[in-house]
Image (tube, rainbow, N blue to C red; front, side, top):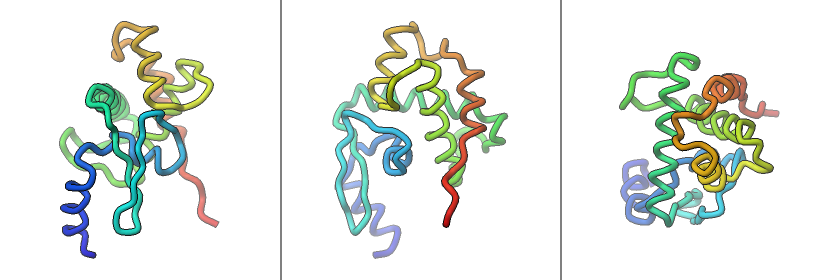
Length: 142
């Protein structure tokens, strides 16, 4: 299957993909709302809650904005390379987990916990989260 056909089939099969799909598939985090599915020998993750998806999209946009200088990311609207997207998602969720002292990196629970403790996601300790993003490294191949 070519990539264009796969992208079309994926858009039909999964109209609401998880914002942190890369991190969930890599095992960096979990989400109590995630619904996994298979398509053409690949795995995808869907988010059934529109509200949770908006909250996660907001968090990811803030992670990207706050880590732009640290990771030398391209401007807004430009796509990220896979390695940088992984570093942003996995490192950002690990940093959020550390900042909230959460027992596990469950995306939905951490976002809800952040909203409960702090009035706005803008008030998170972004310095520590940005350090965790910069420090995150992918597993080495054997």
